Amino acid sequence: MSQTVNTSIRCSRCHQDFSCECYTSINVAGDPELKAKVKSGEVFVKECPCCGTVNLVTSPVLYHDPEEMLMIWLTDGNPATERAAREVFISTPGLEHYTGRLVSDVGSLMEKVKIFDAGLDDVVVELSKFVTAQELGKDVKLKFVSLDGADNTITLTYPKDGKMEMVEIGFNVYEDCRGIVKRNPSMQERSKGLVRIDADWVAGFIR
Ligand SMILES: [Zn+2]
Picture 1: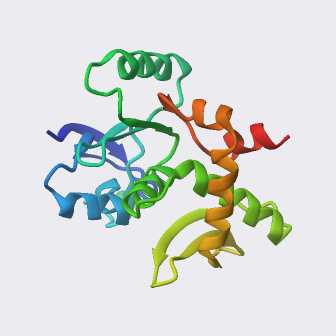
Picture 2 (picture 1 turned 180 degrees about the vertical axis):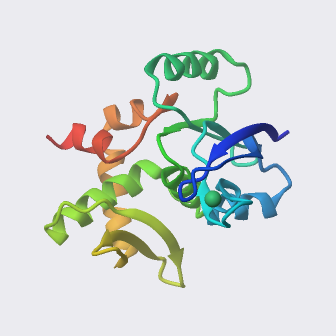
């Protein structure tokens, strides 16, 4: 079951406090509409009743998809909280076959849901992003957008001059990266449990 809590948010524009219902846990079982709202980010925005500004809710939330056996924790970044979450994840019966992920921001949570919903492996996607960033020759922070078409083109995006630049990569890049992950047992081992799989995590294996 999804859970909400009544919280107070300070508007980023007019600085008025207003109260709203925010999710503390999102369970998308049998609710594709809710999942779509997570992917679009709709569940994370609240409109200020005073000035109409759309504010992003950044409070911690647990995303749970029982059908995909997936749990993603958007945390406050506190190491003690994350350690406790890891303990719960490892010791809770029934979660042995789950994929568990920690993320630090709403954008990363949306990205993870999109990756798993497209049937892709986020470890392989992170490595594909790393390779693509190297090829672009820039220090770009790429995010996964979608997997489309008969030839499974992967679209990534990164911010440039205040706009979102799109990059398309062939599925062969993903397949090559999948091969690298398969040949790397420590990568597979360290992606188990409740872990944060991001650019830093991948870079730790490359250096
Ligand atoms: Zn406002």
